[in-house]
Length: 259
Image (cartoon, rainbow, N blue to C red; front, side):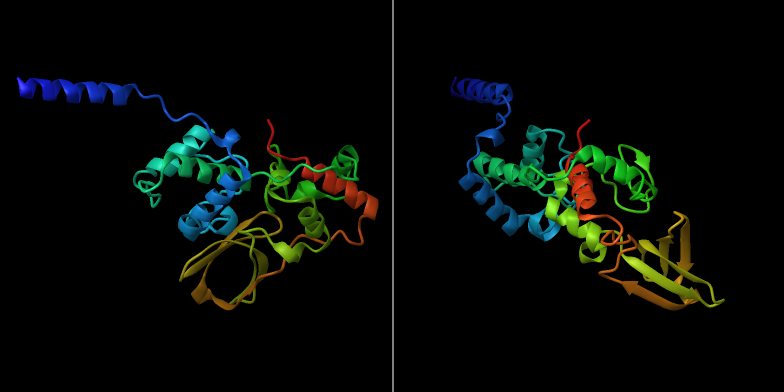
């Protein structure tokens, strides 16, 4: 009799557990203190892989409006709570649901910059981008343009207007991750300069300004120079007027990944 009651109790508990609805999205209810708490947890436990500010490292960058594995806030909560099987992403078994929502809220905040009123005209900025600026040759927006430079469809959500202006005036001040400039000379005297795509102990792969791909064995090189803090993008300091820069920044700041 006692055994039967125990089985019944276990089955009832399992049924209740299975019937539980997933935790409701709490991000909209988080306070500034909650986000500060989420940041503290993130810095202590997540930044080793994802970087301070979610800039990326061993793990993917999280400072972006859309996360491939977390289409919505509930999915983000589940990933933080349960981890991702067969990856280095562990489960957060030692954290309460509230703490996980705090971390999720902080991660979401990394992908959005504040929308501010800017002096420029976005419509004129788009014209400059597509004509005088010549930006389409190297950058993609909405699937159109070149791929030599970073894609810009979400740049306004990831970078502040002041950062965008600095990048236009002094491109080398903050080179995008994955766009290290490298120059080399082969044993037969061939010189090449481009952005590094990949490198290991024996080979290096580059993409040149014409978007052509090149691969070299390091044994075949007589010179290999890496240029941190250097960008292949030209400065617009003397190309665009101050008003034109305002217009271009206003256009770029409005690119926030909307469909």
